[in-house]
Length: 349
Image 1 (cartoon, rainbow, N blue to C red):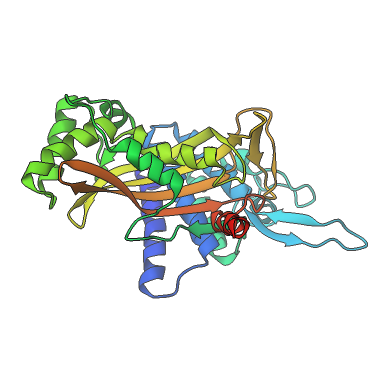
Image 2 (image 1 turned 90 degrees about the vertical axis):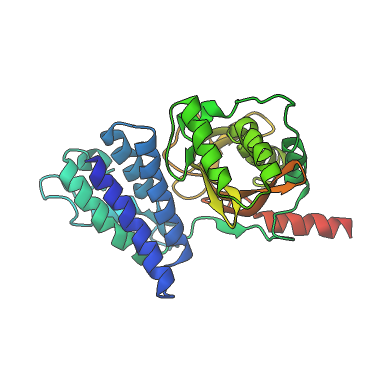
C-alpha cells in the first residue's frame, strides 16, 4: 500500500510537470492544492503514520476545499460550496456507501472503509482539482534583490545565523535523524550524517578552505534553526497584519541538495493556527474565515510556505540567503505582504 501512495505522489508530480512542459499550466490555485495534497501524503510516509491516518488527513483536506461561492437571493441564503458537497453528488463511491443525496454528509469515514476504493477515489479526485478553480485567499512570491529576499526581519535572522561556535557542535543532527534529508535520503547515525554531508559539500564549488566551514555551519545551524525566519515573520505581523505566534504547523519538506555549486535547503511547511496578540488561538474555516479555535485542529491549512535557502560563503563566513519565498494563504482575511508593505511606505511618505 505504501508503494501505491508513492505512485500517487509521482502521478501528481507528473501532472504538474507535464503542464509546465506543454506551457498549458493548470490554474495556479489548483496547482497549489495539488502541491499541498502531495506534501500531505509525503509527510505521512516520512513520519510513518498509519495508512488510515494518512488517508483521513488527505480526505479531510479535500473535503474542505472551497469550490465556489453562491450569492444569496430573496429565496435562499448565500453559501459556499466545498468539495464535500461535490463528492456527495458524485459517483466515486459504491452505491451502498454513497451518502444520501438528500442529506449531504462528510464522506471521509465512508471512504475509509475500503483502501482500494480509497485509491480509486484519489485518482478520480485529480480531475476535480484541475477542473474546479478554488480561490481561497491569495498567493505571493517575494521579489528578489540581488538574488535574495531582502527585508528587515529576514536580514536580522540572517545576521543571527552567521556566527558559529569556535569548536564543532552537532545540534542539527537530532533534526537530521528525525525528518531532515539529504537529496531525499534520511540518515539515522551521526557518522553517516557526517559522511553524507562531507560527500555533498565536496561536490560543491566552494573553495577547499571554505568547505570545512560550510560543514561545521550545517552541523550547527542546518536543522530547525533555519526555519526560524518563519516564526520571526509571524511575530513581526508580516503574514497576519499583527503580532502572531506560531501554534500548530507541520514541516512537510526539509531537504538539503546542491544547486549551482552551492548547498541549498528546500523547505515547505503548513501552518494551521496561530496565537494573536491577545493569546487567542485562531484557525481557518471551510469558507476561508479566521475564527477562534477551541483546541488542536489540523484539518484545514491556513498558510502554506515554500522557501529555498542557499549558503553563500564569503571568506570564512557562511551566509544563509533566502533565494525563494512563496506564501499561500487559504484565507482572504489575511493581508498580502506586499499590500502591508505599500501601506507602510505610504505612511512614511
